[in-house]
Image 1 (tube, rainbow, N blue to C red):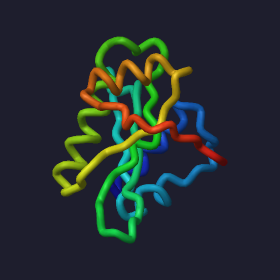
Image 2: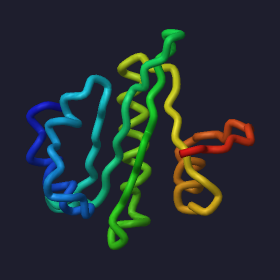
Image 3: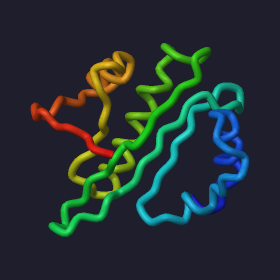
Image 4: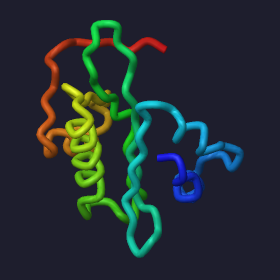
Length: 128
C-alpha cells in the first residue's frame, strides 16, 4: 500500500534488488500487492503480484513471485505468504489466483500443491 515504501525498500535490499529501485512506483500501481514474512522484524520472505487487465471482465490475480531466504525455509513462511495472497484476492472479489512454475522447481511445486492449488492440465509453453 502507499505509505509502505520504507518496508518494501528494506525487503528489496534483503532480497538483493538494485538499490535504485523505487518502491513507490510498484505500490502506486492499481491491483499490485506485496506481502512480507518477517522474523524478529527482519524480512525473510516475500510474495508479490498483481491483477492483470482482462477484456472479459474476469478478475484474477497473478502471484508473480514468492521467495523465502534459505536460512528461513521449511518454517511455514512460504505457505503463509501464499495463504495471505489468496485471502487478499478472495476479499477483493477475484475469481482465481494463478502462478507459473516449472518441474525444475520442486520447492515451488510442493508449496503450491500443499496450499491446495491444482495443475491446470494444459501443456503450456511460455515464450519471452
